[in-house]
Image 1: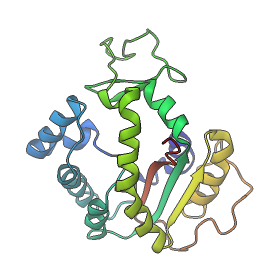
Image 2: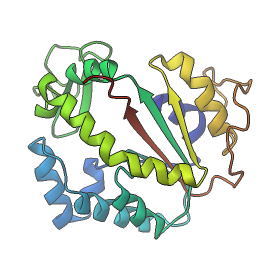
Image 3: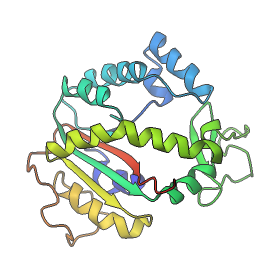
Image 4: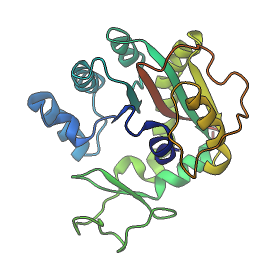
Amino acid sequence: EKPKIKKNVILGQMQWLTLVIPTLWEDKVEVGEMAKQYMEKSLLVPDHVITCLMMSELENRRGQHWLLDGFPRTLGQAEALDKICEVDLVTSLNVPFETLKDRLSHRWIHPPSRRVYNLDFNLPRVHGIDDVTGEPLVQQEDDKPEAIAARLRQYKDVAKPVIELYKSRGVFHQFSGTETNKIWPYVYALFSNKITPIQSKDAYQPCPVEEPGRCGRPFNCVCSIDAVSKLEAS
């Protein structure tokens, strides 16, 4: 869904910020270097480090429209975000456990750039090699099958209070499924209710969702996108 959102409703109208990308830490040497060290070792970046990075970045973007990808993921991050803005819209993609497990286990990355490849649907031009630099790709330890179930269960536990928070405010919208072409019309209708869409061949005009944006406020602050697994496995 992310490429379609960027193409149809974001370009030129909002700032798209992805959770901890290299450009996010370039101007924040001390905290950024700390985050970089964790990520290069495929370790989870501590909550306070992520929050510090994102809050600093968002403070510099006051007065702009934002779309946050992968933030907030914890209640502490959500509470920190509350201090600088009011969240207008939160979307979540609910994907079956087995689908997530399969996709993550086929994911390989280029660590310096964080470019992501998938052996099922986003293959590199040369097997095991980054398209841009020619450097080798690696599979993160937490993307290996034996680690995925524990990782997703942990995420579910951490994300639940964040979801409940935004549900209580009437800004949370969840989409379920695995096929982009089936989910996209609903996502497009929701975003179109908040911000004037960019017309393109992917744009979907009929609205299949009743009252897709319940709060009715102008889309003037933050949209947060994240993924939630049903965790159907035992």
